[in-house]
Image 1 (cartoon, rainbow, N blue to C red):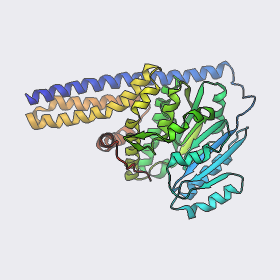
Image 2: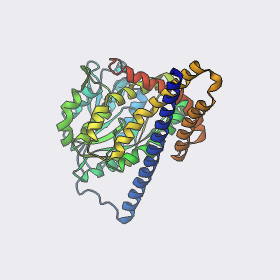
Image 3: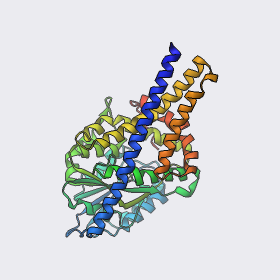
Image 4: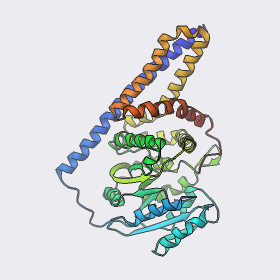
Length: 399
């Protein structure tokens, strides 16, 4: 009886998985293409006039244990912006243990008129951002990471979208700064390319980006003023949240009904993990944030296009369904014998082939699938499950 239940459960998991992959991947591709066509049509119809008055912008860069050369590159990219309006920059050191190595960077840019705040102790990214946001006066606020380098027109391209009062936030396209370092960073580079060429444009078609990128995003200050205390004081399981800041702030903006746009011409490049240990810790942190935020995410998109709910469900369920299929496959082998598994093993392989086929259609390369696929199944799926069962953990594996 137990073996029959396992077989039935495996068939159900297979059916749900394949249906979800086919539906989500097809719609994602369709909406990503429609988003690009929409942009081209608008550009061909008439050039968008520049704003009569460019709003003042505060750029907020929290720093914690950053590599001095990366921070210097970040600062140079901000200083090199071609933004026509007033630009004020805030560097907030969040109690870095390597502050002595960073002081030369702070002094150099402080002498150029930038606001530099050196906090006595580490208080977390949100509180460090608050050290600048509460004193700033710019109509727009750029929140970015200290290991991110902006293209010269990144802020201008993002700020231009705020001519529409319905726009609450704009997120740029993020690439990998250190892609050539090793095989892992090259794989992450290709993963980012898929994310910002397919996933984000599909969400952006509905003016409802589900997560403004932590490395570079721009917000309307008037809207932040309404949401800021909720952002700073968010709790989960009675513990104040100090991570997942970009996702939660996006959810708060979405819940107000404002548009959250993806602007592919606002380009930034960020440094990604160079070792497998760093990457797995980052993925654990990101996945905890994703599952912790689900109730806020669904609240934020409750009145928006149904595709967004499908997108969230697919990202939440597909790794778990894959893990369930593998577990059921092993259980069936133990119960009925491995020699009888040919049919069900083919089902599991079919699940992986369906996923691979749709990734190829989305622009993934065969080498990427052959290398990233095993990494995803063997390491990232277990990390996703561990993140889900340890949501309340006070450890967030930050650097």
